[in-house]
Length: 362
Image (cartoon, rainbow, N blue to C red; front, side, top):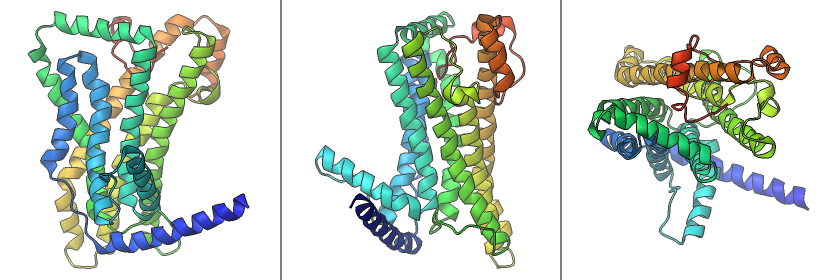
């Protein structure tokens, strides 16, 4: 009975998704104005004036969730599936889930936007849990704040916070590209690469947005794995099981995979549109019209990869200092992948940055 019910439910979803696909293809997406996306990236980052660490923790997560939500909401509105309704909270949440279940398989841009929305929302929930439940992270936040106060007044944080805002906006640009160029493209596809270059580009584009979400999921599993491990075995325990058996820093590694794949999706979308456009100058026009967003996408991917690679080097340094003499650590290093590390961390740098890396600990 359960299997029959499940099959009927899936058939109904597939039928609705097919209807949604036709409506998505028929109605062009009216993207939110760029100033709204910029404000979605700026306003949460201003939390850094209150607590310096908040600009790169809650500000980061909220900026990515808010900017991607604006885009996803525009896509859902064009498909006739609004994400929110003026109902009671429970019924509104149910409607949101139903809209996403229908929309995500039918729209690649929606799937891409959802990946960023998932990342930002998940990060904020994890940061909130850590701050409420783990005293050591509240102490870390205050150490960062004390160090920031010694460097001058709060207004001196403005250049740094504006640079963070710019980085967050750059990270949202790939979704703008796929939304502009991939209207009507679904996530469903047949196996194989038949159909020539267009088919290859379509499959690669779908794979890139799936990899983006997979990278963010890897980071989420890493946080969950480490949190439960330290909860059960103690805060000073070296976690080497679960996902850490293969990735030494799944949080940072997953983010690099996610943001790089998101950026790649933007370039694949432009390449696909270029090949599909049969007009004499259509392909060149697409590259010119998207050049700004593509440039910002690259800046975002490189910028966040540099930050995460430097953080990986700092964490490697601190773990080596703390656990380097143990046989467990030595065997773990031999069998696991460090991920994307940016050079070697010196001792003084490791001490200066020990508190600044807000998304992972020893």
